Amino acid sequence: MTIGTIRDDFPMLAHCTYFNCGGIAPLSKSVGAELLRIPTSIIEYGPARMLARDDSFIGIEAARARLAAFIGADPDEVAFTTQFSTAVNIVVEGLAWQEGDEVIVTDQEHPAMLIPLMNVVRRHGLKVSRLPVSNDADEMLTHFQALLTDRTRLVAVSHVTTDSGTRLPVAEMTRLAQARGSYVLFDGAHSVGQFPVDLHALGCDFYAMVGYKWVMGPYPSAALYIRRDRLDDIEVTWCGSNVTQTGSVTMGVEDLDWIPGARRFEYGGRTYAYDTAMGAGVAYVDQLGVEAIEARARRLTAYFHEGLKRVPGARVRSPLKLEESTGIATFSLENKDGVTVSTALRERWNMIQRAALWGSSVRISLAAFVEESDVDRLVENIAVLATES
Image (cartoon, rainbow, N blue to C red; front, side, top):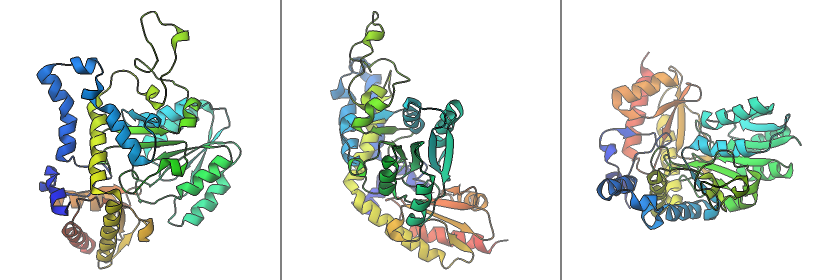
């Protein structure tokens, strides 16, 4: 596929310059068609096949298998969830906490991760330690080791940070944490779809991800990976129909026999179209080639960095080393705060992005459909803002 044909797949790109795949990605025609397939069929033919849970019609198991292969997992280790925070809640509400247990987060975690965590911290009397994010992996690991104790119950951090696009040294963090008896939960919202992810090789315990950013699926599609040997470590808290081996109006406590695998957390009625459309997004990214996406993001990042060098007072706030970079490129201007710059780019030039790093900077997302000419116009507009009082 060429960039031109990729852009043709996203009708919304005709109406704006879109640098916010890290917020919500535009929908391709194929993903949109899959999102509408089930409800369109129900409108025309009725809900019988969905009520019968006919998976040849629903397609959720094919979507699960596609996602599992994409992230280096097995299908029975993957649960589709209604949103990202649902995935986090499944883990943090399901762990057996004791007062005085400790949790490690970074100083750049998204509220979708932090709020469920802080809720269990409040209710169970836990201690929170914050790891400063740095572009120096060795420095981060030194700080991380200093925070780890024998009471560390959970390390819950981003694989790639939301605002700065910093890749954490996740393999070494996993090894160090598990050696101290801690579970590891990664926020994979900005990793899956940006570069190859192999969860079996990584060895983490839990991995929460979304379909509506770099996977280019619909909002708010999401999923959770639970390593097979950790499934029984997570107590089923919220539940409903479809998660037990049998179910009837006469069932009692003795009949609470959970189905195998992570599907036990997919309780009750579900909007299957979002799950299967997430699978369609995975298929789209897989067709482009995630290695090719990663390489292109690095080229665009380097191109953007070179452009910013010509802008007085511009500073790159995301990793400068290309091997550590992602499609998230964050910058600031000396003469304006990030909210002001973000608002101007959106209102004056119809460039969609967002403020970042506590309002000091602007985050742009260099997705596969972004062209060099888009970056050129962005740099030109940033230069205009840099010269205005």
